Image 1 (spheres, one colour):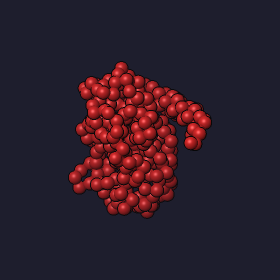
Image 2 (cartoon, rainbow, N blue to C red):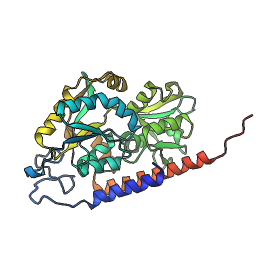
Image 3 (cartoon, helix red, strand yellow):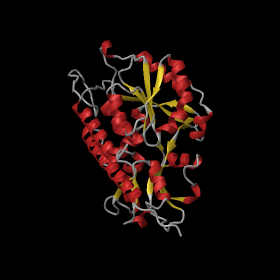
Image 4 (cartoon, rainbow, N blue to C red):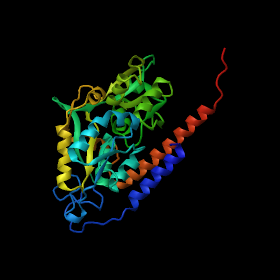
Length: 353
């Protein structure tokens, strides 16, 4: 998808979300930050199931998606044995949906076209508040919920030892909605003597994998990336670990979560959740998520508290106004990056000696 196409797609998705009929539940005693289509009577911060049985959904096929942070094709292969398990466990056909960007993923769940989805950490709050997503599972091990850190990544042969030394240098964030790739750096980097937008111009790479590869190719001097993404790239040979150094790292954040729509029939929602918890991980999943071997239950209210705090402190609450602004910035950044890549590709090759 080229930059112009991505810009149009993201803008369209934003307009669809914003133009959604606001069928406000007038009898809703508590809504919190949820969109007016949803209610949170029990105070768990996620949308309640519809009280009208006619509005509960029981689709014949379940659409399954993973976060668009990295190459969707890679994860379709990794998750295929699990999708086969889900199909057998639920008795419903499972269809993989290769989402291309966060806006499309959120809109797909809001409109009822996505039923089981792994949302990236920084996107979960928008999915909850604007699409009625209900997070229910995370990956983990017998030690508990899996987590990741924000890595400030530089080339191993670079002179940089501290974040403060990156003033005026080329620093790439990933995308506006990313927790570790954009929001957390805006909260934590200033404490280390480096303020985004003031001490360096924030560049947007379009993804954690692109940031890692950009540092390797010297397009960027430093990039804040999710440690789990970086480590998986090194593990499968997409990046060489000895080419990089981590000059700063954050405390641990919970990793991406799995969500389903709030309006599935309760029996189906419970069945999907139990299918996740009962699954014996395939060797492919264990290899992809080193040290992790199971799905664990979670709640948005408790498990996601550190992420929500970063969002609030960074001035990007999970509401419609912030979402619209981030969709616009994300699309513009993607279009700009595509144009730069096209210009670079159009340059004549250097003559061979």
